Amino acid sequence: MVEAKSVARRVISTFGSTFAICHRGKMMMPNGESKNWIRFLITLERFYILYGKWPTVIHLYPFFIDELQKKLSTKDFQTLQSKIGLDPDEKNPFLCCDERGNKYDYARGDICPNKHSSVMAIDWLKISEPDYYD
Image (cartoon, rainbow, N blue to C red):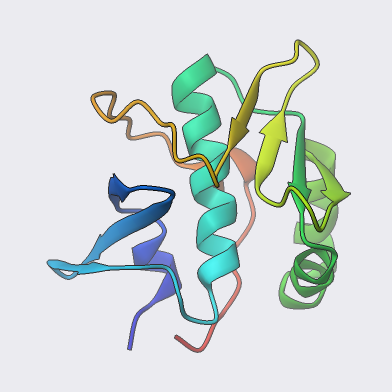
């Protein structure tokens, strides 16, 4: 059983457009119930690594926005929305951008593999991580 809280913190490499993550010393793919939460955090963190600032908008599946609203407390969901705009988008999920036109698309997997950062989106968001079953 994988704990989303631990998994989301240890992004270590990419394979094409799918991110492998390390949990308890084992390589894994974000495929459990928490997969979209993990992709959400990865997308925000990779944007920060590329541009040195946080994005202002993230495109997400509409069902995932609904999921966030259900999984997070009302206060945390409001805090999340005060930090970043959640744009419902079936065609371009996990694409984030800012007012200057900077973009990062999780599907492209074009992070800077030689650039490592200890920055964590959850710290920036200042919310509690949702509970997932995987």
